[in-house]
Image 1 (cartoon, rainbow, N blue to C red):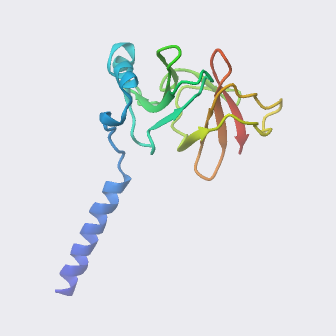
Image 2: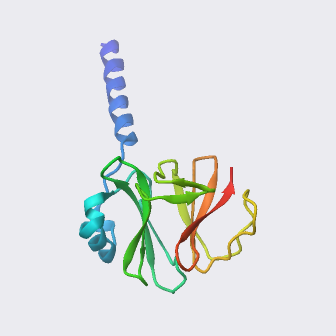
Image 3: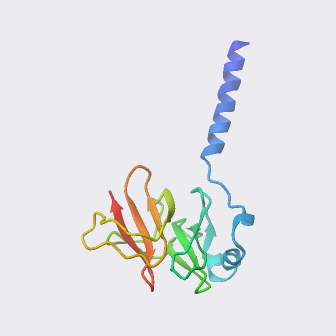
Length: 171
């Protein structure tokens, strides 16, 4: 009897543990309307899908400094499964894709897969400390996205007025 209880407990723990480790599906009700429309139609929908593997899967900020809400969403390329970020700039009414098969310069290296980024949050428009890279830190014209590996390196993704750039924060 005791052996059956131990066995049953192990089965339940394995089932619960494995369900917590799997990627979450994105609830489309949580995606802002204009962003959902842009991700469900056209070229984006043919090449990428929304990715719920990082929580939260969507960030809201004013990334281009125009005073309007912009959104950053985790995505995956359909071909090759490369991870990335799609940023909806409300001023341009379009998605800007970083990674997910699209080249993006990270610490001087061109990458097209951002699967190494496990954490992210909005970084308020403020002074940026000098990072590990040489050169002066950027002057933010809007909010930025602070991304990183868990308990490891981090960087800022920020809008320079024309495109998004990377500024290494730490190793």
